Length: 258
Image 1: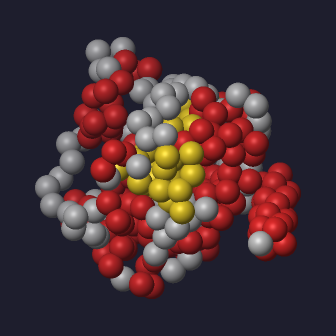
Image 2: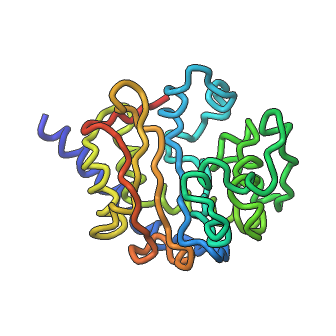
C-alpha cells in the first residue's frame, strides 16, 4: 500500500516538474491591446462543462471532438475588460460583460455559425485552434471574436495565436498538471488555489476565479485567469497577473472525466 502510494506520488511529482519546465519555455504572445486594464483568459474543463449541460452541444456528443480533453483545459475565450472609451459613454462593467462589442454592432439572429462569418486564419493556426477549442464545432470562435475583440482593433490571427499560446502555457504548468492528475476525483477548492500559486507564484491565487456548476456548485466547469493588458507577453510570470473575484465553488470540488 505504501509502495503504491509512493509510486503514484513520485509519478505525479515527475509530471509536475516537467510541466514547470515546459511552462518556463512558453512562447510569448504578440497581441497588443490598448485602452483596457486586463484580459480574462477563460479556460473550460471540458468534461465538467459537458456534464453540466442538459442539452450538450456537438463538441460534447461526438467522441472525436472530445479526444485529448483529458490532457488539460480547452479555450473558451480571451476577454478584454471594460474599455475606457465604453466607460466614458456610461457603460458599466456588468453591461460590458453581457454585451461586449455588440453594444456597437448588435448581434445577428441565429446560431453562432449563422450569425457570424468564418474567420480567416493561417492554416497552422487554424489547426492549433481546432485542438485548443472543441467549441469550434459550434462556431464558438466566431462568437468570441465578434463579442470580445472585433471592436477593439485586435487582429483575428494575433488574438487567436495569443489565446492558443496561453492555453498551452496553463496546460504545461504545475497547475494544469494538478487538475489533469485529479480528474475523476475530488479536491479542495483551496488545493486548486494552492496549486495555482505553486505554479505561478505566491499570492497569484487572487488572479484565479473558479467556476462550478451542479448541485451545491461542486462540479468544476471553468477557470478564469486575469492577465494585465501590458504584461500579456510575460505570462505566466507572476507579475503579469491581475486581481479578480474568487468565484463561488464549494469547499470540495469534483473534477469530471470522460
